[in-house]
Amino acid sequence: AEEFGIQQALKDLGLNEINNGTSTGTDWFGNGDIIESYSPVDGALVGKVKATTKDDYEKVITTAEKGFKEWRTWPSPKRGEVVRQFNDELRKLKEPLGKLVSYEMGKSYQEGLGEVQEMIDICDFAVGLSRQLHGLTMHSERPGHRMYEQYHPLGVVGVISAFNFPVAVWSWNTALAWVCGDACIWKGSEKTPLTSVACQNIAARIFAENGVPAGISCLITGDYRVGEMMTKDERVPLISATGSIRMGKIVAQAVAARLGKSLLELGGNNAIIVTPDANIKNTVIGAVFGAVGTCGQRCTSTRRLIVHEDIYDKVKDAIVNAYKQIRIGNPLDENNHVGPLIDKDAVKNYQNALKKVVEEGGNILVEGGVLEGEGYESGCYVKPAIAEAKNEFEIVQQETFAPVLYLLKYSGDVGKAVEIQNGVKQGLSSAIMTNNLREAERFLSVEGSDCGIANVNIGTSGAEIGGAFGGEKETGGGRESGSDAWKVYMRRQTNTINFTTELPLAQGIKFDL
Ligand code: NAD
Image 1 (cartoon, rainbow, N blue to C red):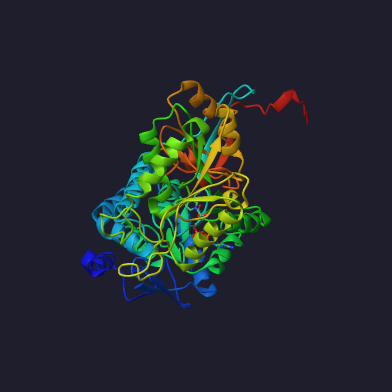
Image 2 (image 1 turned 45 degrees about the horizontal axis):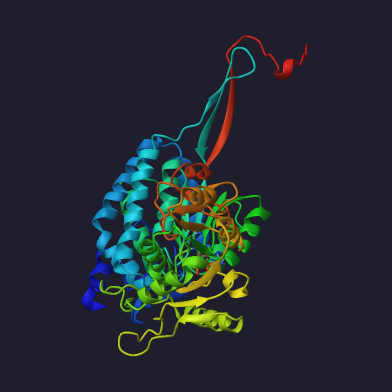
């Protein structure tokens, strides 16, 4: 790792040998067990972080509640100004933070930088938003009355995030929640604790410089047990949770049991439909990047390719050919396309999926396997694989978080392809490759894709921050990032004001005293 300057990056980000608190000392407490973070890139120890105990959590939540009471009174453009300064710091630290993301999580350095760029973009968006937190006015049915709605800050927002986007998802939530006037407590993934500390360090420093009350950016560290402290806590009105469907079902129930709000961003099972009118070259680029980028560990990764029978063989040959060019290796080396999976458990899941698809009658087109030898010592590097399969296979119905692509054939019109595409429990991202306007519009119509994201002539993978991001069905229904996603971080209030000397009742009701 040293040739890529990891030690310097850790230093630039203010990380210590053992990390258990920030400079302000009030917005993150960790006195629990030591969490060791090992890099999937080379298997080496990245650093250590102390976990949050129950007592630590009590201090954090009390500080956050207290801080919120002051923060909510700041004018939102002033809060936006703090986010602007935080963003300036992100721009300065883009390279070390991108490098740490790449090293601790295993995605390519380009993608690590891309993730930090997403943080920068959402902060820009949030700064503008800080002057646009608007409601509507409507005409009252009563004379001499005015009616309008306004949005107030919600309170303490809990953010639970997954390993695969260890920094962007935090900022998608917090940049908006902060300008909305909320305090945030973040439980990052236990698989990427150092990136969490690095982000928290940046926020804590900028917030302290601006006299932001303690507790507006908080970090708690540890596994699901630390997450549960928040999900069961009625002092946290909103939990935004990103991760597996399994986790989402548990979190949703815990939050619903106390009638809290949850914003869920869960797993996907994303497909690209390839019709006879598709541009094959673009299809191959979109599908290969979608399937192998981030080693298949994006919630929007392409898992299924639904190809019309007339062009099936052509597409198959082109994709198989493209897979031969893929270079697998150290993600910090920009010559490589694909880095490692996050850990050995992920490798096992990948191997099981390949075994299972054969057992169910699938046909392997591009052989998988775990790489060994020099450069692959971490044991987490695998070969992207392709299998011909059927949509109803149990394994195809699941999200395997690894570079395994299923090739499915359809015949008939685009309606048949949409049926296959929608025939899974998840509903995150979807795409169609076609130059046929009728097919594209049918795919986007009410009878088309049932996903939160539906693209035409681009793949399933990734999304711009300007749109609302999220998915339907078991993906959880949440929306975050752009558009009007900010509304979930606020409470809406309807106000009616009587400016007459009378008190007329609604619906003409008489109540004479
Ligand atoms: P995971 O579900 O194992 O963990 C996600 C987070 O939830 C971690 O911080 C974990 O500690 C926490 N957690 C787990 N159980 C919990 C519980 N009972 N209570 C509270 N917190 C709990 O997921 P992962 O392996 O880190 O990430 C991969 C998954 O995330 C994939 O399924 C992927 O599709 C999904 N994901 C979805 C999106 C999206 O926006 N839809 C984005 C990124 C990742």
